[in-house]
Image 1 (spheres, helix red, strand yellow):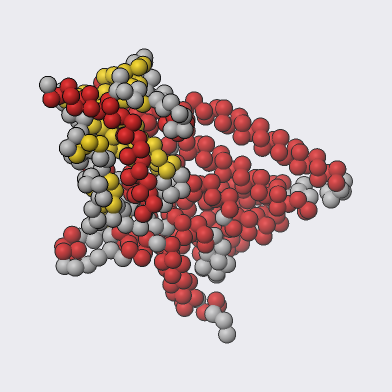
Image 2 (tube, rainbow over the protein chains, first blue to last red):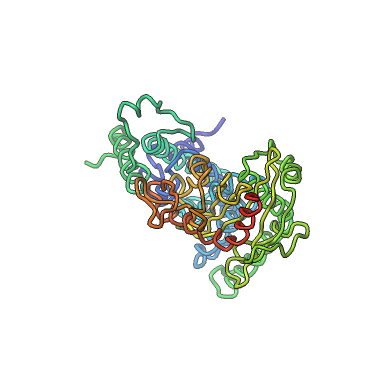
Length: 207
Length: 238
């Protein structure tokens, strides 16, 4: 269905070119939204949507953008898209927009967006740019979900708000790890994920 | 055409800004009625949550609100009702209201299972932004029947826990008067006691500032109602 190149564009961000694990972009939002799983998932979807559409729009405009002000143009496009997402959420899904509050606005500052616009959309046609946006959004989301999973499970004993660690375990003396819900632990979990990924992928190891 | 000439850049950015501005303004105007309705409904939902009423769906919110909230009015510092026209309490913007010297004191009167409850809006500061809520008092004017808290941007998993029922339920049945004097219930670190002998509630661990915010919000917003609550207490004793 997809050509070899399209597949590479979509799937490379999962492994060799993962925006968070290999390029170490978007770390700040990874810390902020991964205390529990649900905001992590909604954030991933929002970032993916904004990234894909921003990529397409910049790609369509790429031949007209003056190089000297290209960053400003990219910022304006991203900011406009983020405000649109925010406005639509307020009108059609008020509850979710309340849950995510400031984080939607903070998508603008996500380095992955600027990185992909600058590195990919400025030199490629709209369709590959769209795929690149989806792929990188998924690669980012994947890390968010993994980190959110461990932080919510170990920090609060719940998943998506449901209690998963049974009461009898607590009665036996088990306690939630309070450190897990604090920001430093997000970095440590991300580092662990990076470690696992680099250990498995020989190409990423430094000689 | 030279893409790097000054004229091109200026014209390009001007057109881009105008287009983006127009699109955003258009979207804002189109969606505003729906957003306002959502906001009003959300406020109604929060008020109803304070008296433990959960509307089944979005359509039921407005009808439930009409059924349960029988009266709403503004009172003054002496406890007298000053304005009881329609939606008078609902339309008070608490954020702006707090800053005014002559604060309006809105009260919603609700009937739940034939009991009268008095709902008082509260508003304060959390760690990242405003926090607010609704406190439902029993007819005796002393004990809390139920609470509901909301926030704009507290940390998820920490300060944001004030919106969870586990935290809100701790307020139920607490007294805000001790031997006839106003002593608002305090949110303190687990195991600590209040300095002035008020009843206490365990704070959320990891969210010290938000917990303190809730504590001072309750105190600051309920204190002006002292005279009003005392009239309630007087009427039930008779």
